Amino acid sequence: MNYQISSDNIELTPSMEVLTKEKFERIESRTKNLPKDSCFARIVLNSAPENRFNVKVNLSLSSKEYFSDEEDYSLEGALIKVVEELLEMMEKDSIVQRRKDLKEEERIEKALTEEV
Image 1 (cartoon, helix red, strand yellow):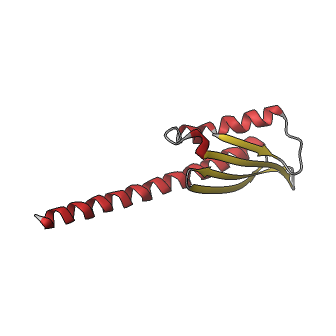
Image 2 (tube, one colour):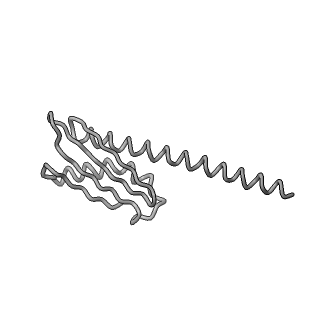
Image 3 (cartoon, rainbow, N blue to C red):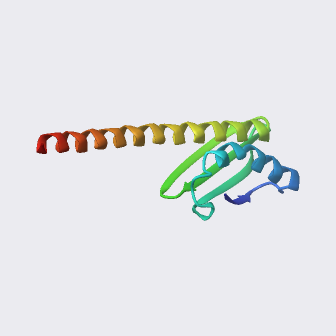
């Protein structure tokens, strides 16, 4: 997966980038079947009011686009929330696609049995 990690209002440290990539390993593990150059994550890490962190992510996986925006009192907490939300969206998409595939298979099967 290709990453663009940036911030609008804080200086990013190498440890922040390492933490971000560590948290996104869960998403990467579910995209191994996709071409590496078709997976891109634009991640913006910012500070927010009341000593909070805000994480915004645009995730592009082949032809699918996902977006998440979460806040927490720790950067790690905000990253975990974002990753969980993205994984839920990805899972929902895969379930919907599987249902579409099954319906298509049933339609084809029905058409073939009607021809006989």
